[in-house]
Image (cartoon, helix red, strand yellow):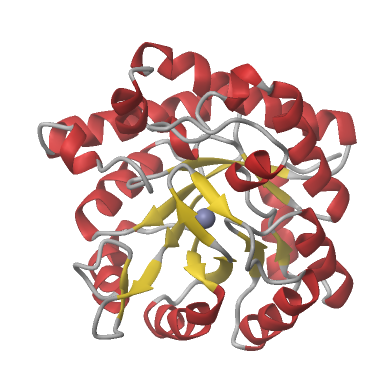
Amino acid sequence: MSTSPYAFLEEKLRHGGNILLDGATGTELERRGVPMHGAAWTAEAVLSRPEVVLAVHGDYIDAGAEVITVNSFSLARHMLLSAGLEERFVELNEKAVRLALQARATKGRQVAVAGSIAPTTFCSDPSESFLGEEEALAAYRQQAAVLCRAGVDLLIVEMIGDILQGTLAVRAARETGLPVWLGYSCRRDRQGRLMLWDLQDSLADGVRAMAGLGGEAALIMHTEVADATVAFAELAAQWPGTLGVYAHSGVFVMPHWQFNDVISPRDYAAEAGRWLDMGARIIGGCCGIGPEHIRALGLMYRF
Ligand SMILES: [Zn+2]
């Protein structure tokens, strides 16, 4: 009898195993030549280049990833609104899930499929797109429900950059009943302090404020490799449950990722060793980090 993909992950964690997450979806599509939309980033890739999306998911599974992430980061309603693609919201999200499920079916491996919900993005601010909290919450609920119905095993709220939008998105995700992972993004302000991405709140304040919302794991994600260790230590001090890291490498100049200074797979794996030593149980990569980085992690550590 086979267990569900998420039950398999829980079983691994219970027995002391760690979980290998995939790397970036959006920047990996760009690296393979998929055009990025000026306002909606990777939103159209699932329709314009589905075979590349499928190949990216498949390559992560081949590299050893036990969780692959649906290309739905830029399919939030506020992103599609700003790009004039709003009427395709359901179609795009459903198609994105189908491609991840298809990749898993093709590879025939025990892999969980995570739906991505982004309460902020590089390019569109939900607080500017929506009239108020109710409208924003309704939009997150719609996306969570579509991803859930289409068959994802868990939801990752990615790039939590402020307390308000993060809270709304996590609430919406939790209402589906699916397991939810919280992905906090950090960067330094002008004084050098490590803050949540929108530079309004410290990470510690953010994690404390959102502690009551629940969730199955909390991760540092879309944070520079150089800052991820400090951020992870702060997260670990606040969050009593399962922890993880998937950092980014390179710089984003909307809508293009600059790959020039991306860390090598070997060096990224070495950095990840510190996160594992500090208690991270889920390790993967964000922007700039590709299948070869994930393969290097799988070779260097026990998952
Ligand atoms: Zn990223």
